[in-house]
Image (cartoon, rainbow, N blue to C red; front, side, top):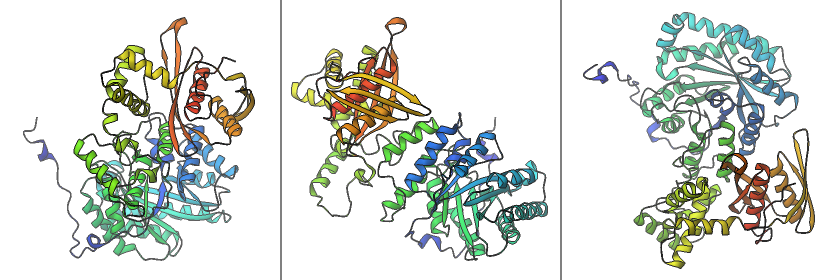
Length: 554
């Protein structure tokens, strides 16, 4: 074993840029955003998305407002090819959106990629090859002239094939992969070769990645300013960056790169991606927001975005994740809580946002102030959740733990004494599971992917359709009440085993885009448990009789 393991590493050489201008720059407008959740994010998943999850992610990216979306690697697998064709053939690409696809600089893969795009209204063809010494010399055994010949030959092929499809509005994206580890002169030469082969003045994105972070963010900013001086300002050229997060500085690298001349950023929602992840686009966008710069992306219901991302990626978002985690607006320290309360009391409508410990107004992201102001009411949620799980088998989702702990705290304030596990369970039953079944005579039918529900509810016939029984019942209640009810998240588990097993379902609802709350259902049948949970949440919102709401088995 080495006595000093650090001796086998070498510091990354600084960029000799004595008159650098980026430290004095101020970002005053949002960059062009490119989501690569469906490509770079998807390839990093233990279980890559199926077609349904891909479509859910794509539709959400459109709702958020992305105008450039990397939808896949069509030459890599049949599902990637089929998904791209589905978007094109079913005309799912809006007029103001460009899809992007990726291909390595290999002749047969370029040909299949361009063919997969046939009929697309607008397309960005993303071609890449590695240029850094360790890759070109060790991995591929190539000299610098051979690398340049590969770039020229590959881009010429892209030009020839795209010119044969004049009905599409084409943009080339060229990435000198491993840019951050390469010699700047080699990267610049590769980009200039791509420009020449594509045709000067034609639209081209030069995408400069930190394929693997290997230096501090200021070094990356120097690299970007150096490239901007060499290549920026040319007709049709857009400078883009694609930071990774190996050193935990992806966000800083992107922000300094924008100061240094980058016009476009690539990344994923909440930083999903290979190894430690890609750049977190939400983080950069909301950092801009806190500086008075509109990002042009809609995160006004950030919890719904997180729930969809978690479902599509099958990965949780950390409770400490910037802007979106369950705990990021909660202060457990008494002095922090006191400062927040005083600042809220002093704040007047229209004041510039300046609240201690809260860099952004939670309401701008669809959150409430309740968790912020009543910090002490949440301090015991872990113990409450522990007792319910270990004494009664109830595995409350984290956000339900927070909601229920506030109910328990109010009870404790009234009683002025400690509550036992039995007393806490009684409060839970009283709060979430009164007996009865106002939803009667339920019928569930399916036709293709559409589920239809009809029932009698409090003496009134209701009907709705959706992508599942819960969604369909929610729509039926919306139709009957004229109120908007959305399912944000869903959890389920079993209690017991064998003939005595019961299913428990937890449904998180958003009512009228104003109030978020949970419903809980328990039944031997999982579908009935889920529908009971939905009815329970609606009852707690005041849309059903509050004394009874369990769903009878069909």
